Amino acid sequence: MSSSIVHLSLAVVSGVALGAAGALSLRKEQRPSPAQPSSPAQQGPPSVGKGVSGPGAGPAQVIGGGLPAREVRDRVVNGGTIGPISDLLVRQAYTAAYDRRNKIPAWTAEHLTAASLQSGGGDRQMARFVEDEAVPELFRAKLLDYFKSGYDRGHMVPAADAKQSQTAMAETFLLSNIAPQVGEGFNRHYWAYLEAFCRNLTKSFDDVYVFTVPLFLPKRDGRDGKWRVSYEMIAPQGGAPTIAVPTHFAKVLICSRAPSSSSPLSLVKSAAGGGAGAMGDGKEWVQGAFVLPNEAIPDEARLESFSVPVESVERSAGLSLLPQELKSAAGARELCRTIKCEVVVRRFDDAQKKLGGGGKGQQQGPGQGQGQWVPQPPSQPQQQRRA
Image (cartoon, rainbow, N blue to C red; front, side):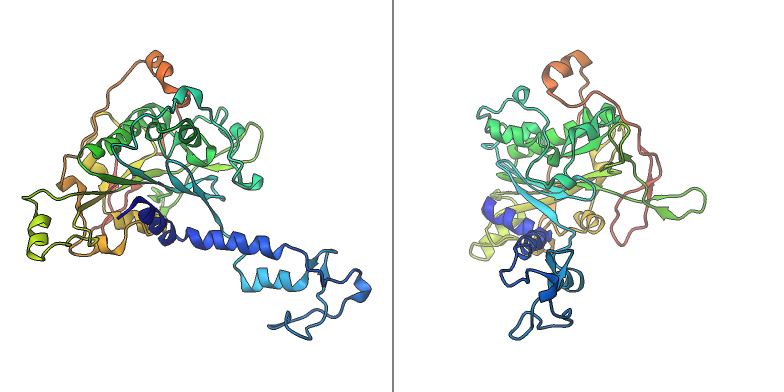
């Protein structure tokens, strides 16, 4: 399965194509009609019901001197042009959907290979955080929003994944690829080494597809025992709160490779006369997901302790991340049953990090608390986990 097909499939099943269509519809409806009356005296009575734009419908009523009433009706009654709309952002090294309400990515998707991770001139030291002009100004994350926020500007697609060109590197520093992350113990440590773990998968697999998904998960209220979603909003100094701080972040991984002669898939393929495999391409597919709290995580924490079913992330985020073929009984194997899932955090002093960091952020944010809910399979009870 080619990279382009996978990216298109992932974008469509996530519902982003519908949002893009809504945006296109809105632009079309905003174009003035030459048949609009020039003055209120020329207007007929407001049209009600369907078919007002057909023959004999009469002139459209103008609201506020410029917007035809039927366009107001189409937006309010028929829907499809109001929103919510996710901005689909296609970059050199990744594809993303931008969440206008929370002003962070709804998800990002990457296709990693050993070749794509080779440096082609992309230099982190030459990149700077910038606002994304592809996002409408009203919904755009601003540089001042993060100033003295107490949080790092955390990359959803890491800069280290985009060394193929300076343009690709610069696109990872757009604020549409950024979400507030706790710095010390998370963004600069455990999370960074999870990103490295994803890159290292290209040593074992031909193709590695990585989703990064900010999550807002509930935690139990100690007063009444009920589950509630509570999260912080950061704001520019003296301004209104603007950007939502996720309680958790997820990495969802889909990997493929040619099966070895001893693998179960190879035996099935041989018995079937070739062409076996979850996607009908004869490849071995694996999948896995990890959900981490947006807080300092002990260096010695086992990566497998954060492993959850992919379906749990999909349910919590309202996304369809995996093709149905990979969810079937003969679909993809579990990642951590195929390879060793391990993160080894190596600490460096601040001076070394600043020399090689290139804008990871300077401040440590407060933790998001304990007793938070982590997605579980439907057959298992919800559990609490303390970092």
